[in-house]
Every structure is written in C-alpha cells, then in structure tokens.
Picture (tube, rainbow, N blue to C red):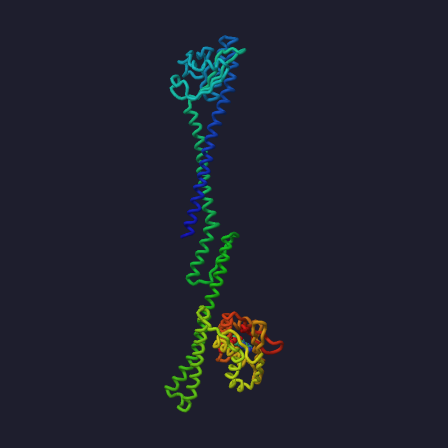
Length: 472
Ligand SMILES: Nc1ncnc2c1ncn2[C@@H]1O[C@H](COP(=O)(O)OP(=O)(O)OP(=O)(O)O)[C@@H](O)[C@H]1O
Ligand SMILES: [Mg+2]
C-alpha cells in the first residue's frame, strides 16, 4: 500500500514538473515563432515591394500602355506570390494599380494620407490594423516608398488580413502545443515505467517477502537484479531473514530437544510405577525399581532446574549475589562430593592449590555449580583408573582454575559446539545422565561475572578446562 502511494507521489510530482517545463517551453517557442513569423513576412514583403518600386519608377519614365500593363501584370504576380493584396499609389497617395479586382472600387483613392509624410521622407512603414474603414477588417500592411533621385514618386503597399495570418500561426501553435502534450505523456509513461521497475517493483518484492516471512515462511529471500541502494536494502533484508531463520531453527531444535529429554525419564517412571501397580514387578523387587524411579525424578528435577536457569540467564533475569569466596575451599568441597564416584572408577585425583585460601569475587552457590559441572564432566569422560588434576594459580588480578582429565579428546570440529545447548559430542559415550546443558550454563554464569572459560585438548591425550575469576 505504502509503495503504491510512493509511486503515485513520485510519478505525480514528476508529471507536474514535466508538464510545467514542456508548457513553458511551448509558450516561449510560440512567442518566438510569432516574432519570427512577422519578421520574415516583413522581409519577404520588403523584397517584393522593392522589385515593384523599380518597375513603377521605370513605368513613370516611360509611360505608355505597354509599360502600364507590364506593371499591372507584375503587381498581380507579386500579389499571388506572397499570397497578399498589393497596391501601387502615386505621390499623392491615390491608388493607381492593384493586384485584386475586388479592390477596384477604391482605385484612385487617397487612402494612405495619414502616412504620406513619413513615406515622403523615404521610410518604409509596417502597420497592424490600420485603414479599417477601407478594408473592413484588421490588416497587416507594409508600405515602401518609390524614390527617384531623392524625389518621392509614390509607394507600394502589400497587405494581408491579420485573421488569415492568425490562421497560419494557429496551425504552428497547435503543432507546438500538441508536441508539448505528447512529450508530457511520453515522459509520464517513461517515469511510471522506470519508477515501477527501479523503485516500487523491488520494494514490492521486499514487501512480499517480508509478509511471507511474518507468516512463517522463514526460508523466503529477495533476489533483485539491480545494483543500487534498494539492492543493498534487499541484501540487508536477506541477512536479517538469515538470522531470523537461524533463531527459528534454534527455537524448533530447542523445543524438540527439551521434549525429548523430558520424555525419556517420564516414560521410564511411568513404566516402573505402572509395573508396580499392575503387580508385574514382584514385591521384593519394588524397592529396587522405586529407587531407579527416584533417580529419574532427580534427573528430571535437575533438567528442569537447568532449563529454568538457562532461560532466566537468556532473559537477563538471572541475578548473582557477589561476595568474597574462597575458591580453594569450594574445590575441596566438590572433590569430597565426588568421592564415591572417584572411588568407583578408581581414579587418581591430584589437587594443586596455590596458598591455603584464595579469595575471589563470586556467587558461592554458582561457583560450586561451575566446579561441579566441570568435575562431573571430567569424572564422566575420563577412562577407568585415569587421572584428574585440579589446580589454581594467580595471574595478576585473576585466578586461573584448570581441571584436567586424561581420556579421549574432544574432536576439533566439536570444540566450538560443546558450548551450545543440548550439544553432546561423543554420542556413544554420553550416558543417559547427559543432557548437554552443563557447559552452556556455566559459560553464561562466567560471562555474567565478566570472566572467561575455554577448553584445550592435551598434546597427546586428555582435556583441560580453564576458567578465570576475579581475585580479591
Ligand atoms: N572433560 C571432558 N572430556 C571429554 N569431553 C567432554 C568433557 N567435558 C565435556 N565434554 C563434551 O562436551 C559435551 C557437552 O558437555 P556438557 O557438560 O555441556 O553436557 P553433558 O555433560 O553431556 O550433559 P550435562 O552436563 O547436562 O549432564 C559433552 O557431551 C562431551 O561430549
Ligand atoms: Mg556435563
């Protein structure tokens, strides 16, 4: 809708400008042509009058029937040549010869009395609309005196009705003005065509794509053949659509991952409890299955808590209560928590802490969550009887914590992905205890603390996770 009004506005403004210009041009051309027409008429009349003046002077010198007849014939000839009427008068202003018999009745009349003085001086006269009583209509008259040795002998007058001249001029005017209208129309069409092709057409394309995307067709893109700002707009639009598509894809993946992770514990809980209620599971085994069910419920609780944490972090609603915390104490605490699992897997754990106490700024519970998560991964992914090494070190105003475990490395192509929600690198090894939420959560916490976390594969074997904390 908007582009249509843009097109209308652009085209209207252009048409108005175009018509103003072409009409002004036509107006000036008409004025110029009017002037040119009379100038050229005058020139033509003057040349013909000159010829007749010569003949007239000759006739006066050799006055006989033949020469008078020749003068009369020449007058008729000139009259038909310039398409006008011609008179020749004597030095008193009486008409002696005329080209048109229609004017016979005014022959020998002193009809140019008002102008005779000027003519006597040898000056030609050009007049519009004089002698109305003689001609009964407005005439264009040109008079040239016949001088012989400085003596005034008479005059040649050529005249045309102005209405006839106007008719001729009108033809030219109508040509000029039709041309102006035609140029206006052609220009308007061209403007309409190019506005549509260059501006509104492409904008419509983008508009259509935007509508489709808003209706869920996120894979929709705009392809334009032009190379201007609108194309840049289309490219910006496409890259926006790319990120929209990515967000949409993430959203779908997230939902399907969450549903999947929720479904498996619920299915097993439902199966075991159903079995107990139906009596399919023998009474003496009930406790065993209930304990598995309990574990599943714990897993579900952890998953839901993780998801709540993540969504709170992503919504920016996750607040930390920062205090001074002894990171060494937290590490000792966490290692004790994992004692059973460490003994089960026969692991050798090496803890190398700098100083007795190492105070950092942080949220105690969240720091425990961070160390627990990394240690949980280390215990989970290390080989039976393998090694784990935890160390703290101070570097200027920061404390660097590193947690190493030997065992399989993280493939290079996965190093980036392990920070994504639900990403599990080694799918065969990851037990059903895994959801792939641990690392994204701790990275979010550390980012909020303004700190870094990264991972490095060892030279030959093993993986080390590093993170920094702000020293007190
Ligand atoms: N110490 C490690 N050694 C080898 N691979 C690791 C290690 N820590 C993490 N990974 C890889 O990174 C992936 C993501 O780890 P993350 O802690 O986010 O998820 P998880 O441990 O699979 O599940 P969760 O922590 O939610 O129970 C793991 O699935 C694993 O493939
Ligand atoms: Mg983990």
